Length: 149
Image (tube, rainbow, N blue to C red; front, side):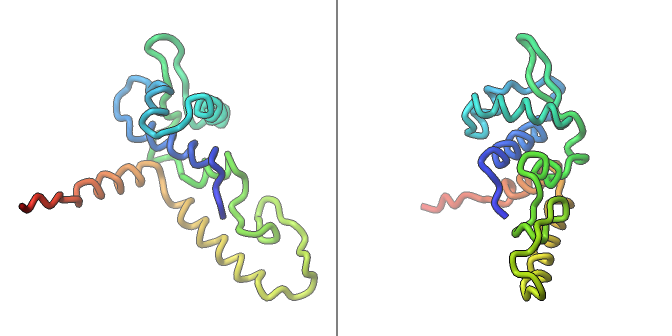
């Protein structure tokens, strides 16, 4: 499975919004700067995420974006599938868009690719954006600079 640049940026934008604890909206320009996403690309992505019910937008000088649901209620897999579609490593094991096998009969890899798909789904469907924020916070506290002279 390979996620597109668009999907990767969508995930990063959702992460930024998940990490934002204030009640005030986060501006697209702030998300773009924080996550190193080209602003024009980000605006299109945020519009798509809004259409998918992942984010809310507020207009005006004090406007910006907020999560539509709490970060612990949004699974990473939901966003990946919304932006990029099925997560199958090969088309024949896709659950939402299966393709007829090019090798009819018994394919020795069909079960293998199904296990790969299920393993990926288990990770992305059981990880929320709140989980990612917690993991990142824990990783930051573990780093201790060595200032030995």
